[in-house]
Image (cartoon, rainbow, N blue to C red; front, top):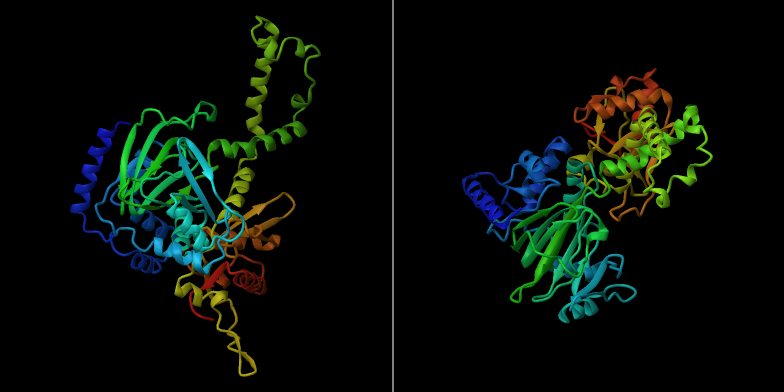
Length: 473
């Protein structure tokens, strides 16, 4: 990929933007308010992602750019991402929240080819943090979604677009400095420039960590300066280096996704399970190795011209092909899904969702007694999942459990993965509810044996915050 072609592509993007009459440059809070009115959370995610990469169409992005090449969107509109995060918000978080060095904040520098971390122990207080900054250190906030409701909202929506955890780091860098050595990441990265500007250089994609020397980025294939309102996307594995120009600080947020979400990551779950099943069910996998295999196999024998080696390797190939027949692919996918649900941020409820879910129930203690206990769920009550991907049925071979995200923490893996066992007679009804989204369905339409079972199941899901009602109870 050459810089000239990138600039040419961006020229076309600017023309598209000038010709466009869409609303994606509006204030973020107004956009999020509009998205809260969208009935389908998957559609909501798609619209927010389109705002993030605008004016590149989503289908074109995933067809031509995703996992393939870096791309720069230069907007010449410093307010495009206004409201997402700011240095003022950074300062507020330091003053009001329990920010811990090494957990929530890193203080770093990169000088004369040496990368250093300067984290003292304990809480990161403004007096010390801003002193580090004034002395030329970069500040990295590791989980801004734990402190910023806007970042939390944005990431919780985008995770449905990716089907994978959406995370973020915020980077604040003083003018004329660099905080990190050249490196590569194992995530798909969207660098959103919020304030100031930053100079970036990219080099060839890393196929193996052993081939990468972090002291030398090599000849760049892309060199750009991001200004406020610009977006830079690059796939995992590209070596990159960012430094601040002398005349301005830089504040950017990197939104990331697709970590450990490759075919290889899935096969890490499929292959051991397939081998365990094959060993149990197929005698060929249990047959002993040749008595003398150590005399002709292994590195010390790899250059030998020995027919026994060819026969041995042919047998391995045959067994590997047979292994496919024992691969529990659906079970492995469910394992990946459980990991994703554990990674997920909890949803940010819209006012309507809050009022119609257990978390917005008006019941309270007032004037010496419990008030507004509320109505009951009946067969006529209309319900649906709170979000398209907030719950999933999985089986461990002994029972069926429903895993869900609505009680997750904003802090990564602070809570254990949430689940509970589903009665066998209720599994079909839960599947029906999952596949019915975004349509509201009556409790009476649940495929359960009795009306009582239908109501009991609906009450259980409502109390766990997994479903909400079309009308207030």
